Length: 386
Image 1 (cartoon, rainbow, N blue to C red):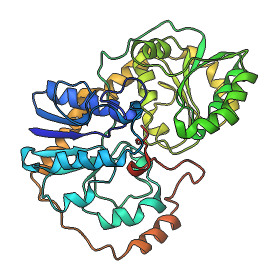
Image 2 (cartoon, rainbow, N blue to C red):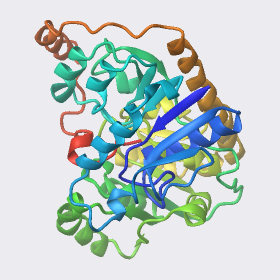
Image 3 (cartoon, rainbow, N blue to C red):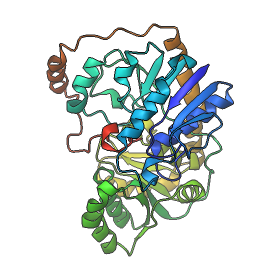
Image 4 (tube, one colour):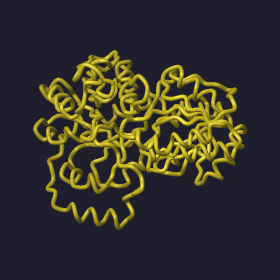
């Protein structure tokens, strides 16, 4: 098949360090090439791929000190994609919603994977207006706010099998890996480590919009807990592999409806169990008692730390291979592509019942996690969370 992959431009594909969406796009693109498909990747110019690369900007926007507005670059990205949509059998978008109006002008087979949280008040009218757009979710839980959208499938993220090193004999520290944003709850991880009597190593990125939170809340907390907490900053590649693989367990104490949580799968690939909060996709991604433990409190998490040594790290790795392999991800997407290629795009529906849908959704408790942070939209300078 002739397949276009359209990535956001915030980070390169794959990213140098942090960047869940761009990382998944890279794994998918390279696997599709390996399977013999003709793939074109629309991404930043510093991306690395075996596919044909069409650069929409010279370098990743968040790595370019001269970039102050991300929207113009994404507008040009879509122009490059739609200049001749007939070049492709299917176009796969990973960049939120900006392309939705253009799909009505170009009758091409397309699918959009939504990588972030779906915040109902922000998205209700949009998805009612563009109800014909084919979508893929990255977990079943992600769909809850808008179950009536045009979902084609749920496709779990997958990693190359040789990406991470299985380690059967870990160290004695707990790991925290991710953004230092409020909903990631590093404060919980620090409390868990203190109660469990374990060292905690924190590998995290601080984004500009989260700098104030870091300085006002996290920095003082790190200083107070410096006796058992080590902040090592952002890691990637071999450093991340060693960081996860040598950990006794990964702590994932989130306080929001996480759409997927790629770091949980990266940890499983190393054989490292995960202790994660019962929120969002966590119960769906985890195999409780096999790949780690799903918990509801700091105290329960601290008790789980004492139980992880009894878990089989080989069983944790096996669960990764069976559920989150990149080949399985690519094959799942190929099923969606083939179905869409042989199905005429749906005609748009009138957006006449949006308020009714809003009342129904709220009334049935489909809006979740009001206290959490909304998914960063394309117009607001932030990739979807994975």
